[in-house]
Structure formats: structure tokens, C-alpha cells
Image (cartoon, rainbow, N blue to C red):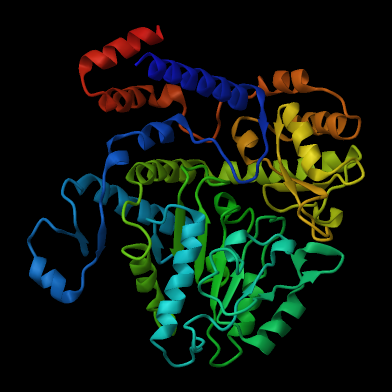
Length: 487
């Protein structure tokens, strides 16, 4: 008993220490991370976090057999009781995300961006196995004959590679989306369209992990429309840019993509889970693919779809709806300012100066002349700046990367503006170029950014937040003791 209590004490102490370091002392620049608001965190720890709500769309005969029973909610068969609340939340979340994407349908039950992508790949294989006019056949092994994607060395995401989520669904190697020679972060559109005509891949996967410029979705969509009976699935992995989709960056479904997938905790400031937005015209040969996506989610990929984070995701969707315009403008402006300031201070920035280096939240720097990317990332961490080391397109190996990848979204949310990123660029230059120890200066700088923006403030919601917190305690006495302990 004593040993267990000591382990608990140590766990709590180290948790608090890590919280204070990352939230009070560190400048967090990982482009795939964000801190959810207190509102979202409290929703996530609420009762649904321990519950199940398996459900699927009922067939006509199932609807008739179960009509009037508690198992039916809308057109869904629910296999657990006590799910009225989470059904309501899920329906509202689907509506909110459909509005956000401009989608006709949304699947919210995937629990990561990786799962979202894998569900789409599974669904396409299942869909094509049934055949249809203008649709390609699967290989004798039951796999996709071809795919087009952004290669890993070109910044493509792991999940869209043959050794990632595509592993069981693709025969052979994909066709790489070609890049502009003097800016390998932009697509060579003419060459891409030529390769599409030549290879006619059944799926074309846009989206990257190193994501600096818009993808040519509209150019592809317009070209495919002229190619007769060729009907590829156009998929956009928007994990990194999910929170800036729209006028400030690009609108992939409006531009002609059929599917947008993503994780919901990078530029979109929700909990860690995934999403699939669908917009396939009713007269498209791919129209019935949406149903396969729902079936491959449940029962095909998940049973418990993490109801606590789904409840929190709805809270984050409401925050995004309210703050979207201002947040997106701030993120994209800050990224471009940060890139310029870094470049001005002598650190080479990737992406093309004539393009403003970036159109997203990401900024990529080349640090090779100052040291190995991995070593530089460690040096920055010791100075309380958290970044990603990143292999650049001309690197021979991932083991000795030349680059550092950063994102401004989290620190933008904590109040940093363009002028503040100039100060940050000076600190980074001191650490990277001059090898200075600036940990104290960085911690002091970060201390000025502790109040979260683009979220419902504590003063606005303290009564509601207190009621959520009180409700998670099993008895009134425990909550009262908790409140007293905080005084």
C-alpha cells in the first residue's frame, strides 16, 4: 500500500512538473499539436468517456422490425441503452462538421486521422469489389491496382504510403505527385495531369505532413471531368490544415475533392480523434461509397468510438464556428511573418520567398550549415522551444535531416502576434546560429502568453465549467473537499 501511494505521489508530481514546463515555460511549435481549451477538456472527462454507443444505419427490413423500439434512434440501430444524450451530441457534431467542410455527409466515429485514412482505403476496396460502370477492377489479390500520392520524401504523410495505412490495400508502388523543381513543396500541375492521363489511378491522395502550399484539387477535378469514363476518388488528407480550411487557405470539397480526412487536434483545436468529410454527387458512380465508409467505420474498424472525446469534439466545433474567421487569419498571418523574420535573421526558410514561404500554419527551416536537424531540435528543446526535426526533399536519409518543421497555431492561440514572432525568431537565431543558452529568456518570453484566445473565456463560462466539474464527482462531499483543497 505504501509503495503504491508513493508511486501515485511521484506520478502526480511529475505530471504537474510536465504541465508547468510545457504550458508555462515552453514555446510549443510542433505543427501537429494544440492545447484544447478548459471547456473542451472538461467535456472530455465527463461521463460519456466511460461509455459505449455502437450503432449503424438500419436496413429497410431492420427499420420495419424495430420500429417503435428503443433500439432505433433516427435511422440508426443502437446496441446499448442510455445513449440518448450521445446520439444527440453525435448528430449535432455531424451537422456542425458538415457545415464546416461544406460536406453532404460526415463520419465522426473514427478515432484518429490514421484510422480515417484507413477507413477510406478499406471502403474503396470494398466498393470496387462490387464492380460498376466506369470503375476499375481490383487486382487478383483483391487490392487497388494503383494510387497517386505525395511521396514520403516529398512531405507526404506516413498513412498514405504503402508501408502505412495503404499497406493491405495497394498492389505495388504508388505514382508520386510530381513537384516543381525549384520549389519541391509545390505540385507541378501540368506534369501531374499528364501522369493522371497516362496512369488513370483509381485514387488520388492529396495532403502532406510538410504542408506549405495549397494542393491543385480544382485543376485535377476540372481535368478529370474532361476524361470521359474515368472516375477516380479524389481524397484530401487535411490533418495538418483542418483548422484553416476555407477562405484563408483552400476549400478542398468545394474545389472538387470527394473526401476530406484528418485528425482534429492540430490546427483544428479539438481533442485527439479523426474525421471524414464526404461530398460525392448523387449521380456519381462513386455515390454509394459513403455508405461503405460508415460500415467500414462500424463495425469495420471500431467498436468503442471514444465518446468522451466525441463530446469534447462537439465543444471544439462550437468554438471553431464562433472564432473561425479571426483564428484562421491570425494563424496564416503569423506563419508568414515568422518565416520572413527567420529568413531575415539568417536562417534559410523553405517554400519559396516569392511565395511568402508558406500559406499554412507551417514554417520549415534549413539548418544544415548550423548542424544536424536532430541535434538542433534537441538544442532547441533544452532552450524550451519544442519543434520537429524534418528531412528535406534533397536529404539522402531521414537519419540525418537538414530541416526543422514548426507550426504557429498553438502559440497563436495563446496570444502571440506578428511582432511576437519577430522576438521568437531572434531567440531561435541566437540558439541555432550562435549556439547561445537562452532557456531563461525563452521561459520569460513564454510567461507573457498564458491566456488562451479563440476559446470561450473562463469568465464567460465559469458557472457552466463548475457545474460540469461538480457533476463528475460521485458525491457532493468529495466535490466540497476538492473545492476547499483549491483554496
